[in-house]
Image (cartoon, rainbow, N blue to C red; front, side, top):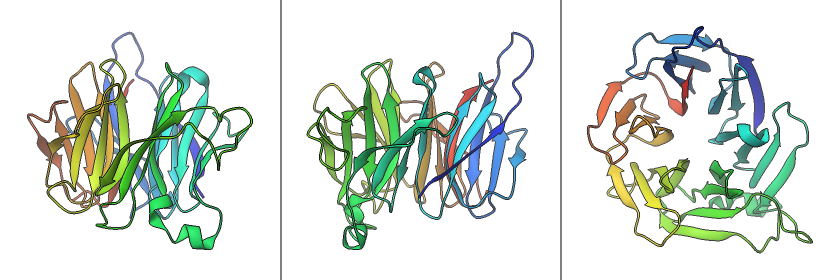
Length: 275
C-alpha cells in the first residue's frame, strides 16, 4: 500500500522564476533538490522509508511522495485538487484529495493472494489528462517478461459499475518489456514512458501520440533499470532517472542526451518544477 506524505518547499521570491528538479534516492531514503543541470544539489528531506513517487505543488509549497518497498508512482492534478497513485501489489489505481481525504479506488485488477502473484496485474506508473478527464497507467508484468501494458480509462468509474469491473478501460500498448513511469505532453498530445526489461526495447524512454494508433518511438536507450521521467515541454527537454543512480537530460525527441549526474544511489521518482 502506498503511503502519502507531504512537506513544504520554499518558492523563490520575486517575479523571476527558476526551475528545480526533485529526485528520490531509494536506498538512502532521501529527497534531493537541484538545478536542472545537477548543480546546487541539496538534500531537503531525510529518513524517508523507500521513497518512490513524487509530485510537486509549487503554488501551495508542498512536495508529495510515496513511501514503499516497490515502485508505485504518483501524479498531482492541481487543477482538480487530487492526487493519483498506483498501489502495485495492492493491484489498484487510487486517488484522494490533497489533504488525504476521500480515498477512492479507480481501478482494481485483482482481489486475492493468487492474483497478487500475477505481476501482469501490478499497477505502477500513472499520469492524468485533466482536460479530457482520463487516466493513463502502466502494468509492468514480470521481470524481463515482455508482458507489460499501458492503459487508459476515464477518471471516474462509470455509473453502475465498480473499480474492479469497469467497461471503459482501453489497452493502448501491450507486449512491452516493463513499462514503469509515464508523463503526458498535453500540448502536443504525446505520451512518454520509461521501460525496464531487456534491450533493444527495454531500459529505454519511449513516446507515442495518444489520439491515433502508432508504433512507439524509442528515444533513449541503455538505461540501467530506468524508472522516473519528468517533462519540461516549454523548454523542449525531459529528465530521466535509473536505479543505477544516473540522471539524464535530453530534448523531447531524444536528441542531445546527457548523463549529467551518476552514481547517486538508487534513484526512483523525479519531478520538474518552476519555482
